[in-house]
Length: 225
Ligand code: AP5
Ligand code: MG
Ligand code: ZN
Image (cartoon, rainbow, N blue to C red):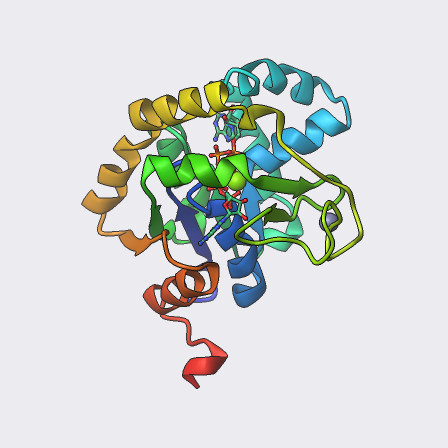
């Protein structure tokens, strides 16, 4: 990579595939920030901003927030100094309009480097979402069975309260899956055609998925020497 080039990664996968979990680990491993549009909307909602209240009406149904506001929010986030070496996109882009916008936003930094697809069957994704718990303060993601905190209901990192997302109700999750197949899954073909798609089996343990992602990205883990 030349100096002007940055590492931009796009994580793809159904709701519950583990995008957020893997993005946070990649953030640590690569030293570039995770940009999760879902987290950004939830942060805005917590702070009762206009953007947060607008997003809520869509998120409660499991529908996509309009492109214009979403793209503007990402553009502002990307302009912050911590993105100087790149970013890991999680939950963005979610349709072709957003993907084309992201190509434009990252063009000066060399464009998208890789688009890893974390593959998971819908049934398993539903099971994971049902048991998910999120930290109210730092947004860290847990699972009551697969990735439990050291003490129930409390975040390991900052002692924050763990809660269940409002949109993790079964009927909303079903619509999120529907929206994924209708609007987001065409992006798999979009990045494949550009030669950027890599795939990992998301049904494996969290550490295995992470190690395989790092290998696909050409980053050596300490264990591999
Ligand atoms: P968003 O927050 O992006 O939700 P999502 O896409 O539905 O994805 P999730 O966060 O549910 O799943 P994940 O893949 O991150 O899985 P996680 O790591 O948590 O979006 C929410 C809403 O915001 C949208 O519906 C929309 O309204 C709006 N929105 C967001 N972005 C938008 C955009 N770009 N445009 C328009 N609207 C937008 O893992 C799930 C669970 O499994 C956790 O409990 C975790 O601990 C566990 N787990 C993870 N990996 C493993 C593993 N390997 N083994 C066992 N358990 C695991
Ligand atoms: Mg997520
Ligand atoms: Zn926390």
